[in-house]
Length: 304
Image (cartoon, rainbow, N blue to C red; front, side, top):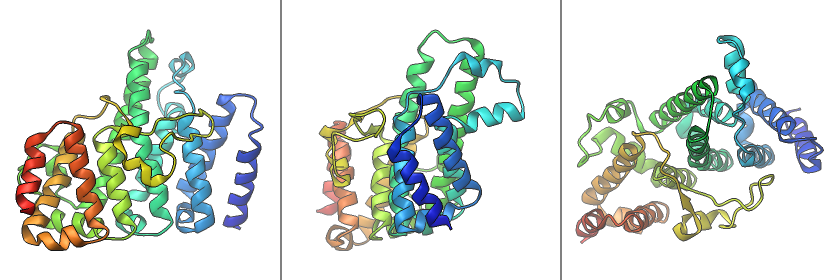
């Protein structure tokens, strides 16, 4: 029954018989709402996961929906429904739903692809919100934007906490030494880096935390100049946004610290592991792209 539901979704999306972006958004957000409330495990099905990826990409490719209509929404339940019907609200709801099972979802052959798509959408959403905030907005719309920003930030935090361990709370508060990821979270993150499926999720997270995003060619399909998924790690094919929460760099540095701790413990295990080594390569590419020469040197010294 679930598979048939997603098959019908695929047909509707492919036909794309919507009069405008607003109607298209309503349909896509309703689909994701159904997934959140009833069928989130559909992400672990091969056919359903591909359709779910397409739903997310198509929704994210739509222009931001901040309009004066939001100012007219009364606060309370109506306000909450309005946020659910936004790009940011739908993505936040999925992160909330996946958080409790983050590690198992990241390690699933099909659901991990959904997570990659979801995580990859985050920088684009923050850029949309940042650009909207720079416009001539009413106070009501500005407040709606702020609510969506906070909700997405909190949802992503809870999801990352589900992936990396409980002491992520201290990291968010800035109470964790940058030089050490902490024994518990180091092992947790490295186990994900060494997993054949979760490694791709960690690499997508590394890019998102550093603000890298796809360059979209088609607003309706979300096709990318980067092309195939593996080309997402070609940083020259990506754009970078500065509209990110303050704790994103802390999370990014924490992941790097976990990787350094693993290198210190056994450099050969990390460098020769077919799944962990690409994470190390991507981290060094990001450091070099950001001209963080000292961090590149620290990784190199640890390896030597």
